[in-house]
Image 1 (tube, helix red, strand yellow):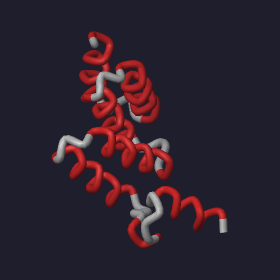
Image 2 (tube, helix red, strand yellow):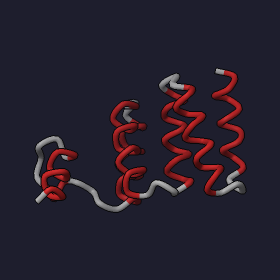
Image 3 (cartoon, rainbow, N blue to C red):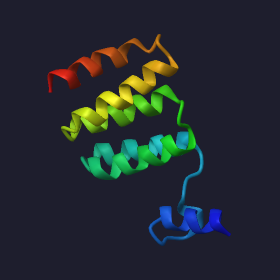
Image 4 (cartoon, rainbow, N blue to C red):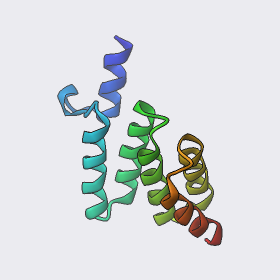
Length: 103
């Protein structure tokens, strides 16, 4: 019951089938929000993806980039550091992280 209620709440009151449950779908949805320049909407979707896959460096990187776009530099640095903690070889994250420090 709680799981269904939580999914309903994540959907903002929409039908349960409208809630993507896999990370790939969430990333695609967030990217659509980004293209529409709805960065707050993209942030919310990326946060859902992090809830499903908290150690996915790609998800953390994308969330960090959105935070950076929204000028939320401490949050972006945190997301980038989490991505690097999971995968130190994710070298492009270092570039984004440096940008957040400069911001």
